[in-house]
Picture 1 (cartoon, rainbow, N blue to C red):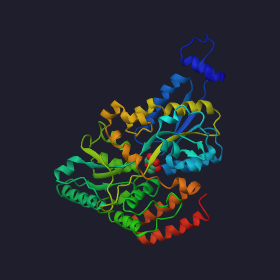
Picture 2 (picture 1 turned 30 degrees about the horizontal axis):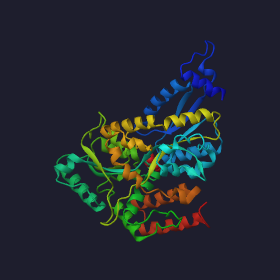
Picture 3 (picture 1 turned 90 degrees about the horizontal axis):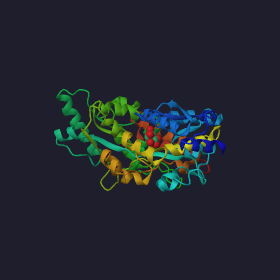
Picture 4 (picture 1 turned 90 degrees about the vertical axis):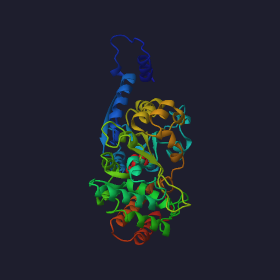
Length: 425
Ligand code: GLC
């Protein structure tokens, strides 16, 4: 109480006497976050502003961009009740698995939660406890090279089959004209959470369900799902480089942004970066929703997103909550929308004039994320990471030519049944 009163007084510019300094009341906080694109640079600028306003100091612990690697490390730290990290930037899928280590933000954020989309707040609520405040939401796009499609008289593909044939046509024509580095399609094919997202899209948009359904039923071993994975396996070494089997988001973006891909599946963050001054594809691309399996099927985008959580083991929980509220605020989410093309979780920002004119993709993507497919993290509860790992392993094996889709999905089903036991816990 005493500390926050002093901080408010300071930020209001009230003179407190020459002997009183902010350091007497200031906390030293640490936030841990994965580095993707320019997100860490941006975070530092925002933390500088927070430090100047609050008198607290904040350091960033930077992690690899892979959500799978981050999750592994964070689980170890939290299990060890590590007090060195105050704030975690958390993936939308982690809430049920990390809940018991995180501070309940319900009371502290009751003045701001109503600004966010209800469904996103719900995704971070576990047994009535708000475990993280949303920072941005995510839903992928099909990035395509406008210039190349126009040059070769091609349309934006509506189905995955059309994507494969257009990618092959343009790749072959460009290569024979001397553009030897070009690839038809890049995506996230490494064995990690990113592949779960991509493959869920292929399966769901082909009428093959969503791995484990919202009621907990294991649905993945079905002919439509097998057909979708067989189709994706046919891309490897034809329209996609063999190396795609090791690509994460940043690898795909690297190929795309140097002008070496006709199509890319990626999240909205790649939009602002693709239009940055040093990008070879600046002004040459647009985005569309992901293709469908067969006519009559609907496009499926996996729901992603990042949030801010306070560790129960933090010794500065009050200051940490203050920072979480600042980073999740309308002001900061607007900066992230304008400069990083991150999709806000605050409803009013979809009508913001600056965002509309500077990042038109954001209002266009509102209906995409509102209709996005969640991964089965809520129904599989504390087993989600294992479920996802089993799924991405089966998919990676199929893409690598290690077993057919049918065989790998049958094996996957047996493993998931074992994992579920007498019910997801
Ligand atoms: C993006 C999404 C996140 C997802 C990850 C997979 O960062 O926002 O939800 O888990 O990609 O690589």
